[in-house]
Image 1 (tube, rainbow, N blue to C red):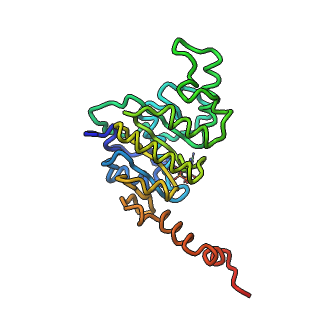
Image 2: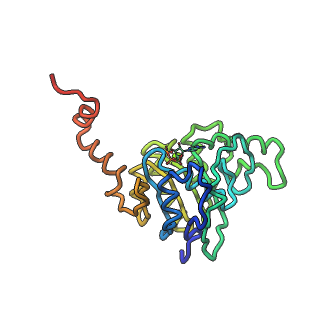
Image 3: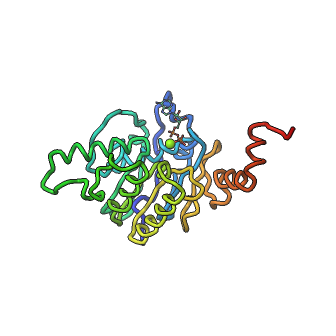
Length: 251
Ligand SMILES: Nc1ncnc2c1ncn2[C@@H]1O[C@H](COP(=O)(O)OP(=O)(O)OP(=O)(O)O)[C@@H](O)[C@H]1O
Ligand SMILES: [Mg+2]
């Protein structure tokens, strides 16, 4: 892939003074330095509440995706909960436009599934939408099955895929399947921008990892991220780690 669809995000103008967004380190970093994209796969990691969803949701909305998720054709809304960050964001795009795209929010994937079922009650000239997702209502599959159906059947390549915690529904084997599909889609000129807590996912080759922390955003190899280090330290000796955490000592 010669160019990326999304190359840079920045905040050229200040947000309203009273906005809670000003307290988020990710927003401070955006206004001071901006965020550059260098790789076809970019991960954002950080503690709960660090601002990952806020950031990628604003990016998705700025690119014309529905705030609750889906392709650019979805326009349902069950709850207007997105922040105003999208109104202030400046996004530098590459020369090529993506031919495919999807914004996945773990929290509202259920509503995407409902919307497909609802639209398919009165199919348009293009036929049933669910055919693009493997043909089985996403509500008649488990959370993980429906998510994998989405990635395996619906994602076609040459796409911009913005995913918020895609691992939420997946078993470790499911995460491996996701990475196999991502590999294929990356070869077909796709760009992924992903918020994640999964140390497994972070090992994806040739990805850039941005860790959001109190003092801003740093780019790190996966072995140096807090998520990977904490998980490895725990799993190297789980019995002693859990005893330490729960404050139990041998009697
Ligand atoms: N309307 C709001 N008013 C005030 N604070 C808010 C509002 N909406 C979100 N926040 C705060 O913004 C912060 C960032 O939330 P966000 O959902 O982006 O975090 P996150 O990094 O995605 O966390 P997680 O890993 O738990 O998904 C949180 O501390 C949240 O409480
Ligand atoms: Mg989140």
